[in-house]
Length: 83
Image (cartoon, rainbow, N blue to C red; front, side):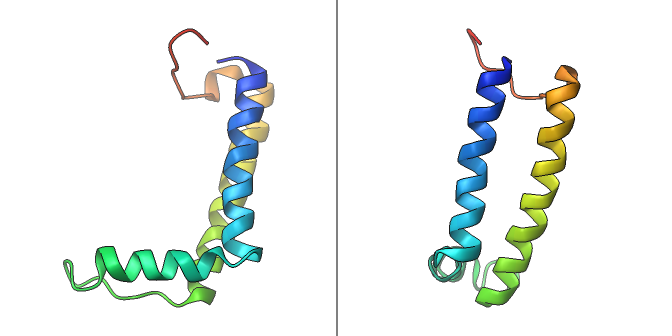
């Protein structure tokens, strides 16, 4: 995968996490979570603060992975035909 595509994928991913954390996305995700998973295998409904904390941890993980991918191309696990 090219470096430009790697950066583009990270930017899209970062915008999604930013939306969840800061721009009211946690409320929307909470409704989706409740609709899809409440009552399914005993899953419980998360509140918005828990969703924001999860999003922050995921964003941190993906940011570290992104930086590793810049310097070590073999870390870029996505395989897209033609790129």
